[in-house]
Image (spheres, rainbow, N blue to C red):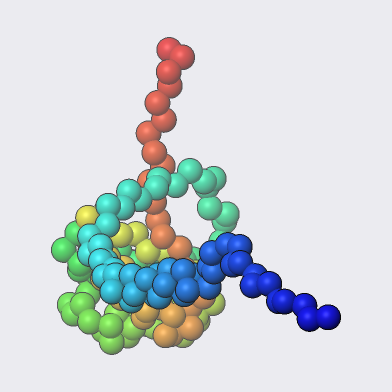
Length: 144
């Protein structure tokens, strides 16, 4: 009784090499792809529509930044515009009380760097109640 072995026919395509090739191509394209970073962003800043600020038990320190990046505390313009001079003026205006609120009124065209300097100086001195002053937008009524 000798049985002859029948040869099995290959019934289908072996997908393993195909998957390997596709995977390698995917890795190649991911590695060779160049990512471009946008250096300029079009940013439209929102307008603030909030209620009137609550009455403060302590008088806040008002710090102004004009469009040229110059600083003024309580209406007195600072001679220097570096962080150390700003910190000294803030500390003098606060009288050593870092719990007083600081209101930063920056011009709309003021450089961002100038506003960040104010926030950095106030944070270094321990002020935690910082506010940015904004204008209320003009209301447009369409039912008139």
